[in-house]
Image (tube, rainbow, N blue to C red; front, side, top):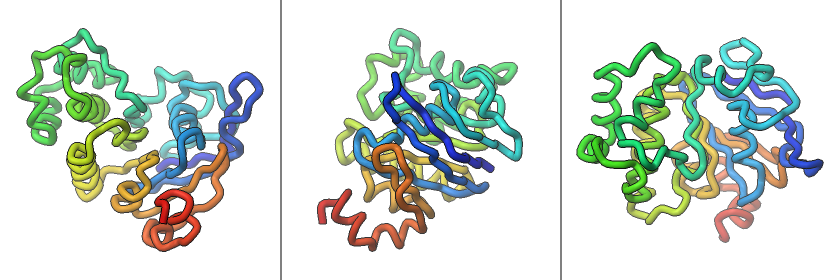
Length: 231
């Protein structure tokens, strides 16, 4: 479904991502793990077209790397950014409706689908998004991306800044989406959670992919356990 080849990004001459290549197949949950500053956010932004990049990106065998950012969602890529990036003064429901902007309109069944996944959002649908708790905002950010009916859902640090009990809720939802057939690219510092829900993963370090493989194998790797899990 997604193929990234030799993707590179520089910020003011500093290399943030260096010739990264990866693939995500239909129905897979694929992780990208790495410490803060490894290049995970840059990778997802490059795929979404929100930063200048070199290299090639294909989605469903169509090259999209030359497209501007506002055209990328129409190719079926939904991006949940780090920090959620909701519109704080709009209602939850208005934020969700904006997620469906590349469609003609948001349909009632789209709202019901995401409200079934996140019942709390239905309770808060008239509330300003900026007044939600951190966990509720993360739910709203994921729900907004799902309103696009994406072929590929990209999640950037969905556990960032959340209490452990909320992280468990978010990851239960990600696991549920994966089991229902969603294709997901998941970038995380929370290595244990990421490897638990993904089938394969790539390891990013200082902008370069240094290792990849089945998540179960990476969980058992002494190098990964020492570098990321503190074991």
